[in-house]
Length: 105
Image (cartoon, rainbow, N blue to C red; front, side, top):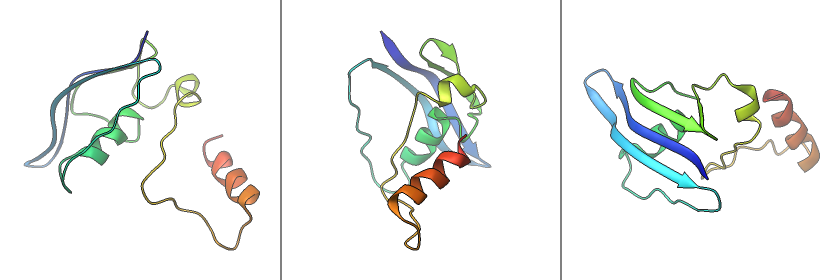
């Protein structure tokens, strides 16, 4: 089963093309790593795939459904762990999780 299928995804910022016609399919159970230098578009692509940014072109299907970031049932099934984790030192681990959980309902 393909859980993520991205076809011809493009994201531009003015004259700068950050993501240029990316095609990607990830099957259930597969693990993917994105490697590249700073500015290669890795974070932009991930933000498009999880619905934080809207691609300028292309399609993204998650669990076989078109995804643009507003489908709550899909958002509940995906997650991203950034390289630099943002936590609040003055909150406990539980309080940090509860706070972030409330942000995403």
